[in-house]
Each structure stands twice: as structure tokens, then as C-alpha cells.
Image (cartoon, rainbow, N blue to C red; front, top):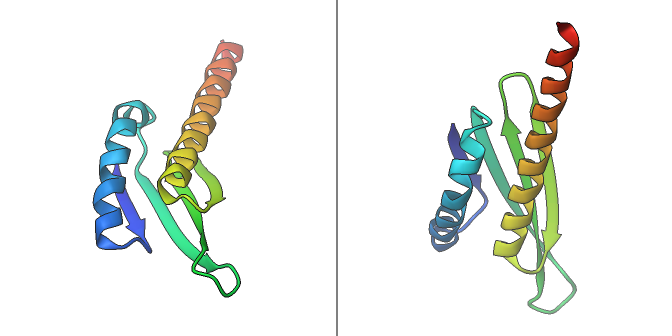
Length: 104
């Protein structure tokens, strides 16, 4: 599947692509068509501190999976979103297997 990254700076994109490589083998088995990660930064008060809101969207053949994480730490937020999407996809596959078993 194709991977789209939106709202990230160039150097962040490079690091995130490396981070996503470790998920590529795991997610490949779900046969996703598209994986989209979107970053929105929210300023907190007057200081330099900002929150990173990561939204993940994974398009499967028949389903659309969503995950969201907000954190000060960008890369752990991306990691958490990927873990959530992976967990959702695994859950869907288990449900599909269970339903196929009932159809017989």
C-alpha cells in the first residue's frame, strides 16, 4: 500500500519513514491500500511547548481504520498511532475469521 505523510517537516518525514519500515512487514499482511498519517501542531500558551496531534488512517479493502494520539513527543505519538492501527486491523481479521467459520 502507499504511505502518505501530511504536515510533517522534511527531517521528521525521513525519521518517520524509518519508523514505519518496522511496521511494514506487520502491516503488509493486512493488505492495506493506503496509510495516511497527518500531523497538527497545537501551541500551548505563551511558551514554546506544543502538542503534536497525530491522526492515522488505514484503508483496507472493505474497512477504514482510524487512530489518534496527542503527545508532546512526536515520534512516540506516531509509534502509538501505528500500534493502535495494527491492533484494530488484527481485531478485524479475527472477526472476519470467526464469521467465515459460521458461514460453513
